[in-house]
Length: 162
Image (cartoon, rainbow, N blue to C red; front, side, top):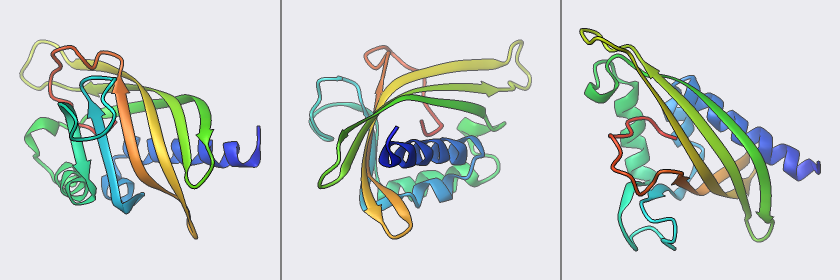
């Protein structure tokens, strides 16, 4: 494992940890000012805006999403989900001018459903691509693409960042 691969893997694991710890504002700060985050419905989609997406957030919308998720009583997250992310199969696809990384992501999401007969447990599996820019503080996310394994299915609302 090269030093770059180790540093990138550490960054992706730190991102997952921020999300599992519900530190959404800190997660949003990982993105560059022109950064974006999206999950296309069609895996053949080349760029945001070329088709439908489960979510497509620029930096401003990421901040709004983070602020809402950190508030108490947000309807899709009441009570809040508990999550556990596993990042693996990290491969560096390009190193210049920016680092492009492919990884596998599994997210287990669990929510207690008050007043209902059963709790809710969901599994999200995806291939994720990050474009990382180097900064004095380490890496920043220029873009993050989440290709859900079941992207073409009729999905319930995904209220947590993946």
